[in-house]
Image (cartoon, rainbow, N blue to C red):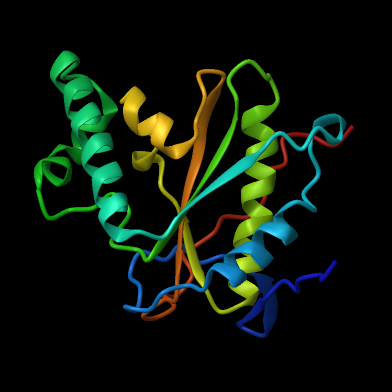
Length: 196
């Protein structure tokens, strides 16, 4: 199995680990073979009891990504209408914009799915996503976890995607070749509560 190398960035003479969240992509497809290589690296992530619960759905069809975006936007807008105190109200303007895609017009999205009834599923997925992002970055690709892309409720769409009643979408990750790499955002020092 091929190992990936974490990309470091020089910042004021120090090398640091950087994962840039990319939301602007070149109009260039990501070859399926490369996505599969990244997913092979992803499976190296540690998980509770080595359960490896994550499964993956690769979406490279941009029309289908638009369909998923529209479904997710519709559901979030319904949630906002039901609760005008929802923290999602800050996204309402974007969600109402027909031209806005929650997937930022990325050429590819990988949906990380897992069992609804597994207590460790979200933590296992978060670790697995980190490996995915590092592997993609080492290949010159950009990624971003799109929480707004997970609100797919239509049973028909879920069936089309291969998501059973026992599973749920945990993390939609967009991936593509970035137009540019932004400057890293400011990070605070570790907040160590106590050393005993």
